[in-house]
Image 1 (cartoon, helix red, strand yellow):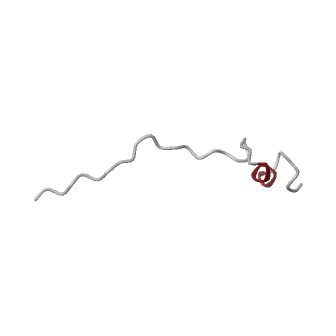
Image 2 (cartoon, one colour; image 1 turned 180 degrees about the vertical axis):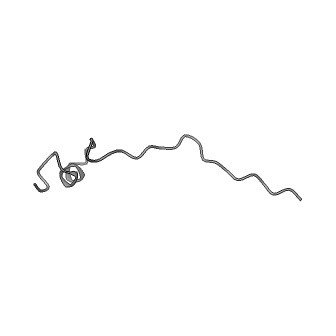
Image 3 (tube, helix red, strand yellow; image 1 turned 60 degrees about the vertical axis):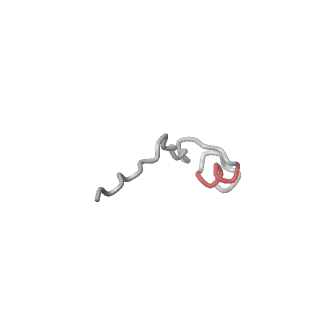
Length: 39
């Protein structure tokens, strides 16, 4: 099981594909900004 094996995480990383062993990171829709401090 090396870089050529599609079922392992290393094989998926080598091909640049995603699946159960290599999940995609979820993108956040909105970036939360902290409220400005009141004086």
